[in-house]
Image (cartoon, rainbow, N blue to C red; front, side, top):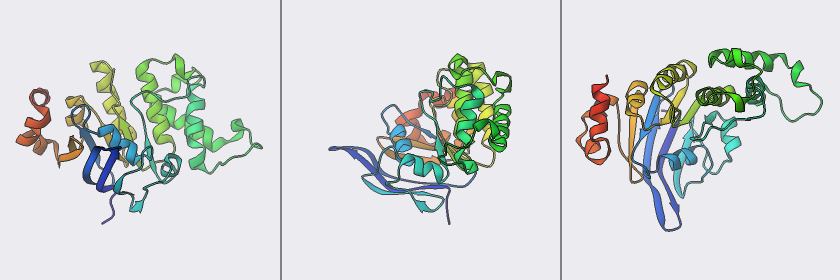
Length: 255
């Protein structure tokens, strides 16, 4: 069986310090997976390995069945994996429309050329408009990205992340810093824009996790302690002892 994303006995060490210890994970196409765990558990390191920022010490990463170990981030992106970051990563001095148009160019077949005017690329312009409407920023088309609210900037980053047509999307703490009402709206947005895509997200808000994920991977000390449905993870005594504790009770009481 070919998975959208598969980790096989993945390990990562920095010097003598082993951060990721024998992680194996298989994510189905179209599945939404939340990666949770205490600070320092290795969640961001896993994302950095999947997206090519770090190279594994050993083990394999397969994207739609293709081994991507050692590939550069832009090569992995072109194979169909895109990610957002904890810190918003946009072009602050470009407008909302220009940010999104930049994101779609490569997927539409436009390579390095100095002989085309962006304004004349109708398919890129149309796709950028479509994305603006999806992330509900169509009324902010010509606003510079740096002048958007924090939540709007995060929405723009989601648009950029999916703009390249990736089939696998990694979101690193997408709702961090948002109010409760902003978080509720943002979860709805994430669900809408990732329909048909495979989603992996690192998230600390248990309400977000249990409201969004089909399955949850619990990472503790660089190992995957559990990978199961939200209901099974809620009931897992080892998970409660190692990480969730009162957080899981709070999340369960909120649903």
